[in-house]
Length: 616
Image (cartoon, rainbow, N blue to C red):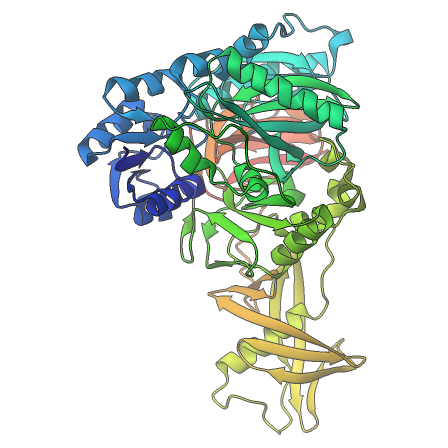
């Protein structure tokens, strides 16, 4: 019987495992890097052990340190979560050799399936050994790990070597294993997976299907269960293949078998020998706790003969701190407030006031809705996200809402190319013209000694705000008749105070809830930055300046790139690594590289000058 369990992970999955352990009466131990010293997962566990350093390679990928932590804290079991060492057979063995219970499959099963190349060979599928023009497009893929890291689509043979190198570097950083391989890239396919759960007594459950086709950078964004639109025979085939794969390696615990479905054909992708990020949708549909089942299996309990009956439909959206309109660039900063309406599930590793750093994945939270039908679940999730309070770094919240309400998604016709086709329309700004006005009125009331409008003429008040890269100036004044603002004819102020502004236009009233944190202003779901009335003239950069879009490390500079070199628009100049992903910094125009300030290994902050390209 397990009494104390160490979670060898961080963030929302660590918090999620701790929650189940509390329900089961199991004490918990967290591990944390220096960057996570005050992280939520370290605060909610009963005990926390420091892993010195910040980089994953020095902390969460150090299996020896984690085993030492478990022994020092008196734990008798280790749950790996997902990512990091969750599919590392050597770590699983080290846990067992230390006399601890491993909450996962046998190391032999991990070895057989964790390497995608070996898994394919086990099932008689060989990767491409040599890539020719006829094979294009191909997918470069990390042999270990997941989460889209170490994956690249290659459409030109000339790009293959560079993408292989980038994939190896990314995989080595994320998983400690730089092995990559290539396989045909199936365009227009759906990413469908089957959740399996197996015990040590020979029972293997296939817990339905999930569709995870909405992806960016090969990482899932929206997932649902069951996968819509599959025929009965195809669903049965997927279940049969998944159970066969699990039995072939003597699998126990929770795992996922992934497929690419094109038409009525299923192409095996890989088996993830761990819990998946999207496991909550399966839990909602089947009414079970997969983490609790993992623990029971590890304790030797048998599963029932048949799995529970599936009920209804569930959809999960991943809320990332990133800007989809700017190549999905991750964002960092203080998370001031995160809250969702009642009726949906929120899994997160952050709470109000936490800092979002640059060392790890930009996932803020997962929001899950369950309902009797797919249409009801999608509507419930879209509404909850739209009404959620997310005050902090830029997120993909608006993209999620628009994706859920997109006709193609509503009809269940999505595939892995959804964002390739629709990203521009899904990120097109749709600003409310009165948001800056509401911010200005709330600010005026928040600063007024009188708490209301003066009934005397006054000089125009001027407020400037930045929203989505654009500046807005609001000019308003108090008059004997109430309120007047440039460009706001016909607008009536029904109510205004520091936290709420109500405006009426054409007989329609709109409420604007306003929050302020320093120079950051949130009007409903819209983030503004309050600007000084007179900008600092020294804060200007030369035309063609390349500024760091995020905090990160310069991991690579294009071969042979020196000052004075001719460059073309869109040409990759250097690569930044942030949140375990590599991001290309490209030339904004065709011209001459007049300055190169970036140095390999350099840590940079947002806005740091990396290079200057002088236009031709």
